[in-house]
Length: 418
Image 1 (cartoon, helix red, strand yellow):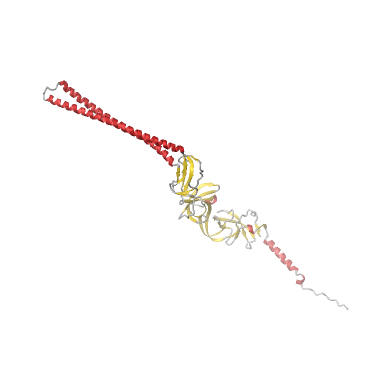
Image 2 (cartoon, helix red, strand yellow; image 1 turned 120 degrees about the vertical axis):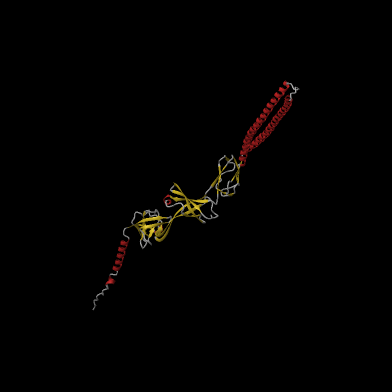
């Protein structure tokens, strides 16, 4: 006979084991739903730049780019017209004062020099001949004056002798002869006086003529020297020691007087001209310390001048260099400069987010502790340097925020980072 067996019942957890899985799944879904609620945007972590808020001292600096320029640039211009025959230097060459840079040729100027030298020599010969002639005339007049003096003295001696005889009562001398002698004395005296006046007038005329000839000769000599200088200036020389900045000449090029030839800059008298963004230049004042980086060395300096003009959103700031300059520096060398604006002790700071401006409010995205969600927060900024900015409110030490461009998700409150 068959015996009917009643099946043994399994325990509850074995019969409904799947319920625990369902419960876990439902819990996870509920947790995920709660955690990722209001997440409306997904962004890849590889596309983000994240930085952590730190507490400590903050050096506020402004960075700019520019060039080293010579404090004093000496322009060299052509002082004579001519054609370029030789170019003896190139840009970057170090030249000494008086060194020949360019040689010009001008055949017409050389012919003018020859003609002027001949004219000056002829004027000198004419002046010497005229001086000899005047001297001869002067000697003739002096001789005539001397003869007139002798005639006067002779007549006076004759008259004095006759007067003595008349005073003694001797009738040897007739009255007519006596008066004739007296008139002769007066006549020769007048002639002598007139001759002396002629000598004086001729001497005065000689001085005036010599002065006039001297002036004319001087004018001719000046014209000659002017042409000599122009011929000498066909060799264009450096007026000071320095580095040649540019040379755009070509052989055979026609040069006019006054044309710019090149620029000479002193290599030991350089300043840095730095372009600073208009929004950052307001914090800069003259006298602030700066560091100039040439990529191979760094130099100390200070702000010496701030240009008032704004060009393409930038302001030119001039930095005076101090100390011994490195050997590799030269005019027109590209440089980078950091200007130290302020030093803030014990403050919060973070790498400067894109579009963040000093003393303003902005929107930032702070990461949660897990780092997979970023929440939108309002930030208030303080002073800003080129790379870092002060945080006045909205963040705490250790918070991490997105500092890269948030333009693609800045309308979302919470974003998911994967």
